[in-house]
Length: 265
Image (cartoon, rainbow, N blue to C red):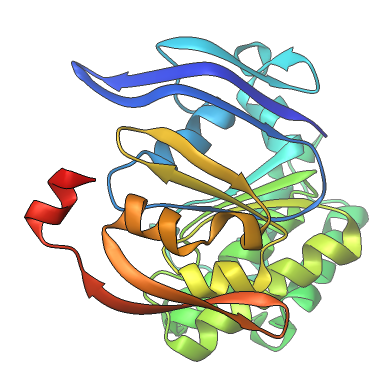
């Protein structure tokens, strides 16, 4: 599947959030979108899925403009796990994950295939033992795995996750990111993940898109190409050292730049 953005701008009222974004995503794997707060990472992925309409420019999926997709059509090929995905009502985990099958249903009831796919998604996320537990009884890590399993149950070709490791402890952050990488590789899915964790992105991503102010793509490529000391200083305003850790970059933060140093950049 090929997702292509050409000269995409987006504004909230008079505030321009994305500026002339050009980006192509055309291969399976884990793609991490990183950048400081307020550079438009979440806005970018919402535009990709047609949830927000660009002010100008063009976004296509396999050559078809995203504006031509119905929400149901889009949900069959792109799964979305928002930054907070708690339900308004308590349901058991099995029924919650089953909601991911809704775009594919031809009748009001779930088919045997729906149940098979739902259980497979739960197995992939290691939550089958939680099937009959209510979602309001889950830990943050368990709840996030349920949300991802629901996205996987859509059987999408692309899975988009907005900060899926937010509010998780270090163990669960690594566990969830590693699971997403493994799923992308094992089933040939494109997984697009918005992340604030530079080292987890460097460790697990196949490709990284680094965004910078004012809502532009600063650089995209492999973690080795994107996570350089110069780029991190320029985009994040911090001095750092980037070392090799078993063939992957690892970032050691040194100090924040002063306001005067930021102006001089």
